[in-house]
Length: 567
Image 1 (cartoon, rainbow, N blue to C red):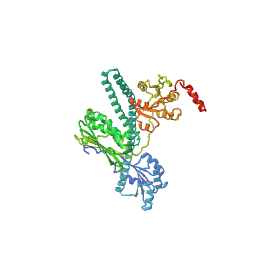
Image 2: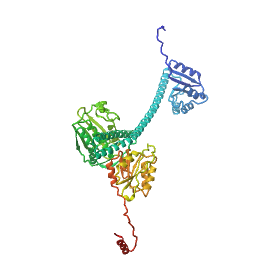
Image 3: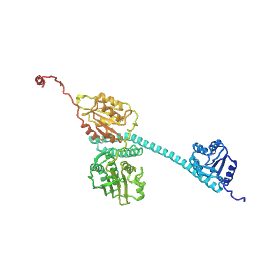
Image 4: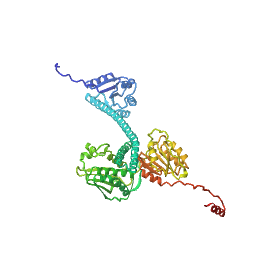
């Protein structure tokens, strides 16, 4: 070889062949055939008793097994290889001088992959060795990759679950102080109006509006985290499609007016009833109409309602939201319906939003067995088409959500209730001291007395002690949660008839509807609606001073005594 010549690269052996044969001459012959293949490593074993140990040490990619052995029969060796964890999937080629079909069939039944009448031509042996060994090596690599992918998938699912749990926990922790901000801003607005401090109202309204905006964003994150964690459930009921649409339009009017748009209702708005989750349907339509209003100015937004057929061939209802807004390119349409993703980066800066609305809309539609798609052209507006079954099928219900809070010291009761005063006694069971403070300042003192408890067990004790006229009950409590407290109240004969008004930051309106609660309030609580609900509770019966009960079985004597005692 010339001095400047580059040496040929040495090929590392990647295939390992183990021959088990009692004849050394056969071993030498096979060795000679394989020595021309630098990537094949050859190993030889003459004794059957040593074959398993040899295989475990060598880790062969192919076994050549002689059929006639002096100590252990060749077919028995094939079975032993198949029972061993190291060699159970290694390809085995039986070498034998027998050519009859019965022997070949017995070999395959024992677990052999191939059969060669020895000694074959070198070209045939090399072809079969390489074919079986290469296939085995590829299979082992694929199995390893599959296991690695499964581990990565499990790690990703675990990380995704941790992320969803983190989002849910953070959403909960953020909404608690936001309730106080929104509640106090409402109270300060009213106080400013009463005191004539009108200069403060614009700033207070900005605080209130910003708080509600932030709360809506947090709610969207919580919805998404529940969807990803598989904890979103359906509350199915029969409801009027027309009524659901009217509710959504009423909520959307401020958004329509903001950009000077016109909202038009077309198709079949009075389309009868459907069996679905009304709350999620309203949220779907509100999200789509809100988007249409946001990306359209001085234009028209249209909500079309029509009967249709779902992709599963079921009778359905189709809601189409069209707008004359900015529209989208096909590339932008392809990015929709993904969490935290908008059509392009400049959209968020110009129009705001988190990119969660359409993702949640799609998830809710699919959860109810429906679908959502988009048709759009840049500069000519967009159309979002949602198709839902008229009768949505039920899903398994999830368990209640656990409490995330830590116990808070019990608050003292400031008011002393006098049953003779005619005022109603309201017991508030909530671990947030801000809620106690806001409710104490919200409830008119001439009508209500208030008692407080900050934990479920303490709330039950106070309820049994005070026999209140109404109970305001939070769901997330230290120890015994609100649902458990409600169940205990309904089991107690002395408390069973007491109205219980649920108030919580959790999205559990569906469960509240199916419970024994009198009413349900999402935090921050609508003060006017709360006072209206409490106003429907019958006032306590107040005995007249000096009243007495007459017990007499003679009617005439009873009438005489009554006339003599009347003033």
